[in-house]
Image (cartoon, rainbow, N blue to C red; front, side, top):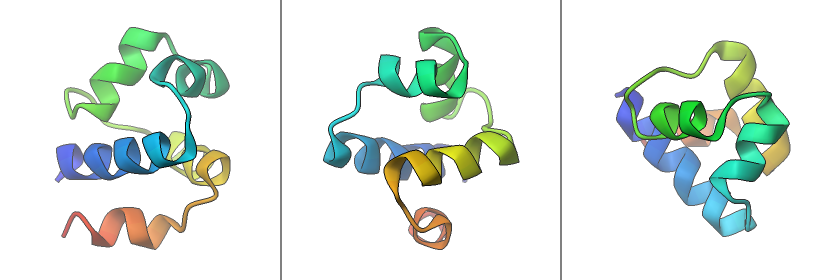
Length: 68
């Protein structure tokens, strides 16, 4: 399920025109760390997920429900 949420975040990030590097900077993560999280190798923390939703102006429920 983690990978599915990451995939949904990636799709929304691309739709909004952000790079992984830009998202990493905004979250205070390394580009590699962000990449690992978006690709499901590691999990986003709740705080990171909430901030991602704010940055992307995305409804958290929609990013999760697409994964279920």
